[in-house]
Length: 95
Image (cartoon, rainbow, N blue to C red; front, side, top):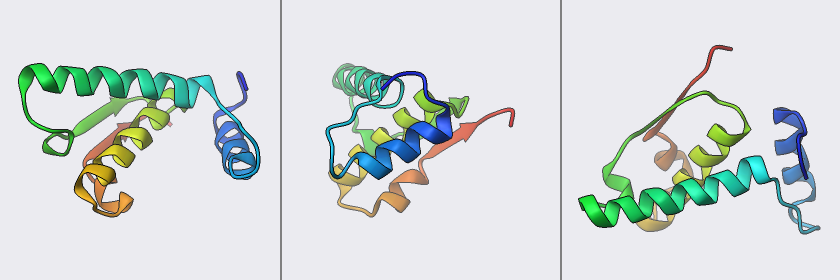
């Protein structure tokens, strides 16, 4: 779906994501492209995703989607709870 307000988009994904095939391009599409870029960059510079901290300027749909996907991947790689992985990520917003 496209262009729902930030809080609505996340609520719709949570509500229908377990029973329907839903996709939000701002949240999930952007996040997958950014994560792919970060993983590719790590192959050039060395290290792993859990070795890094991440800071986002803006906590809109795209920023929060990217942050959550990075946290999920860190959690997958380290086998740590997602809450621990989120501690490596900061989002700064004006609101």
